[in-house]
Length: 452
Ligand SMILES: Cc1cc2nc3c(=O)[nH]c(=O)nc-3n(C[C@H](O)[C@H](O)[C@H](O)COP(=O)(O)OP(=O)(O)OC[C@H]3O[C@@H](n4cnc5c(N)ncnc54)[C@H](O)[C@@H]3O)c2cc1C
Image (cartoon, rainbow, N blue to C red; front, top):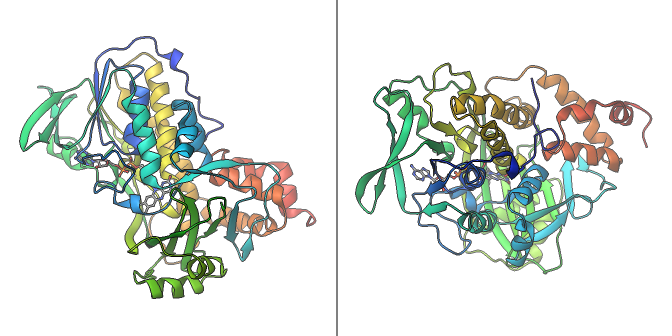
């Protein structure tokens, strides 16, 4: 199995694509769709991004992205790729109120009974709400030559050529009318509720096999006031046998987003009083203290159920129409506690860039899926590998999960007092380095040798 993370993916280089021709249509202006549009703009004369939502100018949650009301952490693989694809992204985000946090000093990560030691090296990322992350990407994409974003435009089906070998456009519902938009390439970035499997079946293709690992997760989220200079971040993910977890992170508007999590039938509450009581039941009092000490900045506690990690195995299909590619959550969505979705979408955009850079357009989808599989594999292994720590988790268990879990449990406990080990661990969780980096001799020595 090839492993693709930030350090192993070929990085973005616009000079690799010399010719722009044809039209690409991207369905979905979420993070995955916008990232795909960025790399397509190098190879297509016209890139049209369609979204069923109105896409307001402000960074506010919207209907088509209901998860946008909940915290979104940006891992290193996503941060570095966003900076490469959109020079000045971080500055723009910070100008709009986003916050720079350093994993080695601002982030307090509770796992295996204690907080991890702070690492010796700075590891900065951005902290903001999901709507703000997306709005700044959208501004950059809208400014690209040849790219148009069309809101209020719902895609209702794919259009096929006469022989049904290729998708050659989309059927859309816009201003109450059904019309068609022709395209040389259609990219499905419609998220977890993607209709591609159904539309493939409708047009005589087999839908992809699906892997599903059930965790029965729920999120409850609210916001409290934050002193502008306070960047403390707390991560207390559920960890067997504890089915409760939570987190707090600084976001724009001098707020902390405070989020509670429950898995396998444990449901975090939506009333303010119960929310604080639930926070008090976590193994560290920090979230409860934030809720007690800081004025509330939200009228509601938002709730979100997330039943399962889900992965569509497009790479295993023998027959797939030309002219169609699927990206982001439409391919795979992961337990959000591990914050991988944007980073996976970003690495997939780099894979799409590399696939286009070969100069060949034929069989693009299967060539893309083959490489994107290696990105999804890493995120999947880390997410479901951790989720199988709960005996209640059901679904196909990747080989080697239990052994890896035992090793990581020991590594994590050592990392309570060993900042270098904590650093190595976090760089894997953030999809910067491959998991194999945790089996290097220097790391093994820190895990099994005499304690520091
Ligand atoms: C509760 C929760 C918390 C999360 N936290 C994190 C985190 O901390 N860090 C992280 O990296 N990831 C996180 N994720 C995952 C992250 O939200 C996604 O992985 C990431 O944003 C990529 O999503 P996407 O663009 O593929 O799909 P989406 O964000 O779902 O976007 C799909 C878009 O397609 C549009 N659309 C859908 N159907 C149609 C149609 N027929 N026609 C036109 N438009 C259509 C929608 O309006 C929407 O704009 C979280 C997910 C959840 C559920």
